Length: 183
Image 1 (cartoon, rainbow, N blue to C red):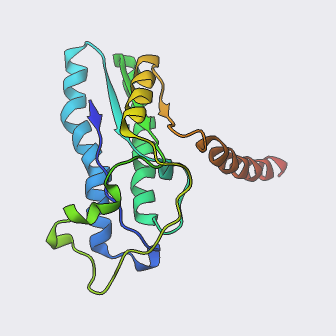
Image 2 (image 1 turned 30 degrees about the vertical axis):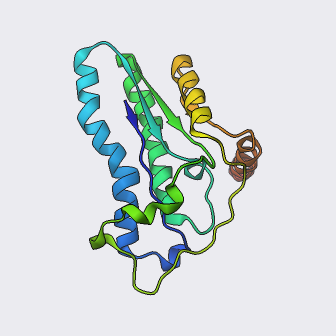
């Protein structure tokens, strides 16, 4: 099973509207939750194992300025996936969370699919966001994801650039944990 949906709004959290939160969380997080609600009980009941792939983002592990609503939704997908990985292993059901950086999709034009009742506040326009890394073709991401499924891997990272970004994040976490250990 593959839960793959994503929309984005751009701009600082101080400018996010309630409608922004509802739309992005409704697609990015609740879309995955709905897939889990519908298919996980069936996979468990069949007793034949299986595999679930949830599409998150590198933004689900490392925050990005100007994309707080999106980041929040994708952090939740990562946490949900990590928990599913533990919960479902006893049933022979694998879980993989896909954490790509830039992929050649139309997520940058997400607004085209935004329901009118969850529209932006009048007078607001998307703010520019700086992205790191190159744009990869979907076929490369698909190949790497299939390799991860076959290998029973929890995480899929698509860009070599992600390694240094993750190292910096975990170095900050390690420094904070070290301070706690010194007490």
